[in-house]
Amino acid sequence: MQHAELIKEHMEVLGSDGQHVGTVDHLEGKDRIKLTKGDEDADGLHHFIPIAWVDKVDTSIHLKKSSHEAKREWKPGTN
Image 1 (cartoon, rainbow, N blue to C red):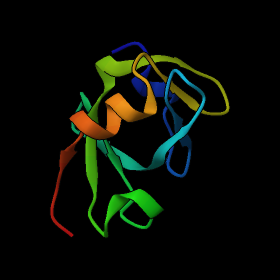
Image 2 (cartoon, one colour; image 1 turned 90 degrees about the vertical axis):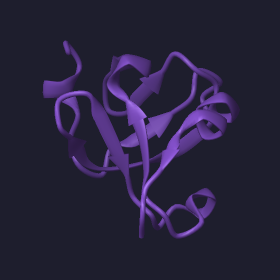
Image 3 (cartoon, rainbow, N blue to C red; image 1 turned 120 degrees about the vertical axis):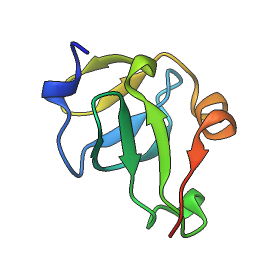
């Protein structure tokens, strides 16, 4: 994926609406971003989003989906 090499730990992930989705814990394999479990909306669980959702990367990761859509569709992991 073209964005994978730009994604770093602790980067903020934003929905297409500019709202906070999460914070990067690390890349999981070549195609998933693992989000930290400490974010307010994470309910104490890591969540995974596909790199395919990434629209662009600058100082933050900007998704093609809104924050609401991303949180509705993310895959929960275990603690």
